[in-house]
Amino acid sequence: MGKSTAAPAAAAGQVGGMTRGWQWAGQVGCIEGGGFTGSLEEAVSARLLPSRWAHSLGVASTARGLAPRMGIDPGKAWVAGVVHDIARDLPAAELLSLAGRFGILVDTVEREAPELLHGPVGAELARRELGVHDPEILDAVARHTVGGAGLRPLSLLLYLADFIEPNRDFPGVGEVRQVAGRDPELAALWTMEKMLTYLFREGLPAHPATLEGRNFLLSKLLKEGRWRPWGGGAPDARCCHDRTRKDGHESGAQP
Ligand SMILES: [Fe+2]
Ligand SMILES: [Fe+2]
Image (cartoon, rainbow, N blue to C red; front, side, top):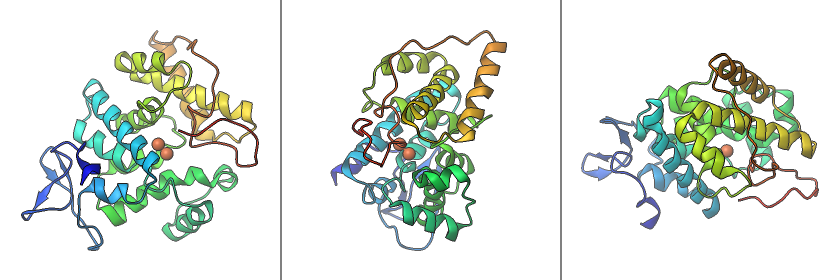
């Protein structure tokens, strides 16, 4: 099975002599419901388009690589990256339906742009169907679409890794990758600003959590003398594939 060969040994657990479930740092995830008998990677890849799965592996690798710099368990970062877009290929109507079934409150921006719900809906699917119960991983998956103020370290890491994984090729991504290795919070600030600039330019609604996250990080980095502007390139859809127009307006190809 070629798709899961990129998984580290720490992410595909051996439980009861059969590959079933996942683990990191010696903790084995519990699989509930009996609908999932392979590795976590097999279960997620079966739900995604090949290009989305390639993106997810890129996010997982990027997050795992940056994790030690942020004091985060690399295996945990890998799992967050693998599962983060598990609901991304569901139709808007299904995302709204699942949000209702799961008791997820849908705000006005999410009602306008239901694709944003693939974060919180995906977190709930990961919990219910894949046995992912770690609150930090679930929070990171739920928030990766819009970010927010005062994000937990893993949530900030996943938001950033989603933006700079190797399949992204928009102008200036190299500068963000370089800064991410030295100052992940500055790179995350730039990521939120890039997303907001793209949304404003394209006439798409911006979620208040993204603006709050940008203001939070800006204030923090200014106080700490770590802020500097990003000079790199005009934003386009290659940086912001979770938010692209669906009304025929040309906004570039999705990765
Ligand atoms: Fe996503
Ligand atoms: Fe993603």
